Length: 357
Image (cartoon, rainbow, N blue to C red; front, side, top):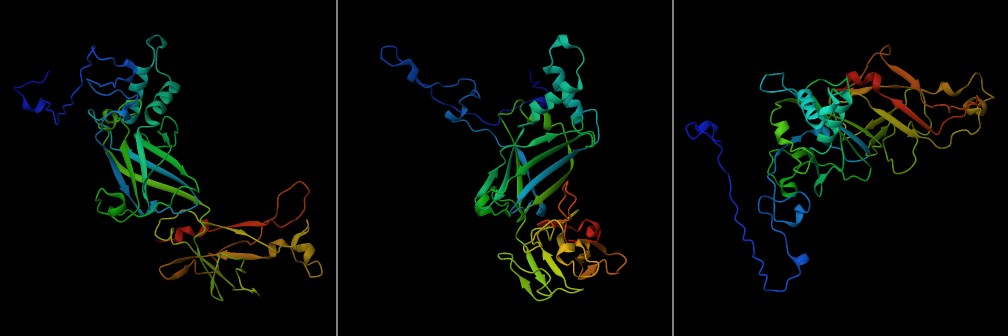
């Protein structure tokens, strides 16, 4: 019970609702199946949407330019690290152990690692309702995968990771606008909203209110991004039709510039360019057979180097620091031929250390 003498320990009601419940008159012929149920002490979860009940929204929102994800196959991982251990602030792992201990039948003895993992997924698989800002409003994520150090030992202790995948048909994630998304947030960046799910297995607030957040890190992986800006030594190129990337008559020093507005303002750890060729020589001999009348010519003679534009300079600037790779790739097969693949990938990973958004 609350102690009236100690106001710090008293709990006060923050709201009160009064609903009239009609009395069923037995004199009237009313089919019992048609009588509407009226919860006296709170609505049950089943059929809750049929009753005028509105849960208090508790959660948080994240604004970041990393969330500008307009197209392609997009994977997002949100890593939430909590503060160091305190007696009154148990770590996430301790909470999961306690939940697993309560869920486990008494006769089974000590809680096993498998039991802890089962308790974690049962509790955290739907603990949030996650939404992203799109051009038509907030779009919910249908599903996500939670993780902690008991699942992946590479993950930091006392941290929670949420990973979800956005397919190609998911709407573009766009900057927040109050006229479209409401809420009146003081930002114009793309946003991600986490709301506690009142229908989760355990009510989330009882767990998360004991965890103090230290930092949040967002990692995204995107493939199939086609909104590019292309230039070569002749001029601007259009990706809507086939084009010659290094000009109609390429020579040593010809270049292709690839820009991606979506990636321009982000800290990149890798950047690959996937190319689909047409007009390649057919057959298992590849370029070596195609140019068999010429001296010592094979598929690896076409080479390119990659550089990154940073602070108005192409880096690395010296020839020693440049990374050279083959422009074409050979199909892998059991026949041992040298058939040129229709697809090739140019990796900018070795020079991404020069990148500065």
